[in-house]
Length: 136
Image (tube, rainbow, N blue to C red; front, side, top):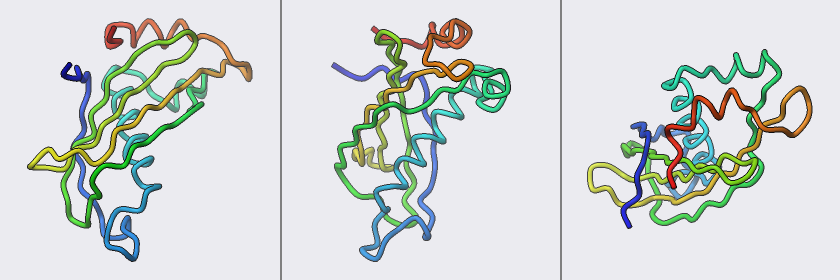
């Protein structure tokens, strides 16, 4: 089954993101994925900062990354995502592919939840915006 992505963002590896082995340090993949999620939200008209100012914080509850092929300095890549809803969680499936050969660098699952006014809760407002992007 081919993944049905609802958003993608192209980026490029910067020198300082690499370790002594000359490959992207594992922690930087989390930055790439977070940036992609934030840009996805912005593309839907949702500002992460505005949500926070209104007492709604979407936070990562769990993260699972499978590292497939390392990226190196100067590599261009695309981070793609698709979204599911599981109970109270928004689950982002995020895959990063090296360009131009589309070799898979990572496959990840990022479980997020909402904290509304300091309490774990559903956010009907966020669901209303994201509902059309949720895949079965």
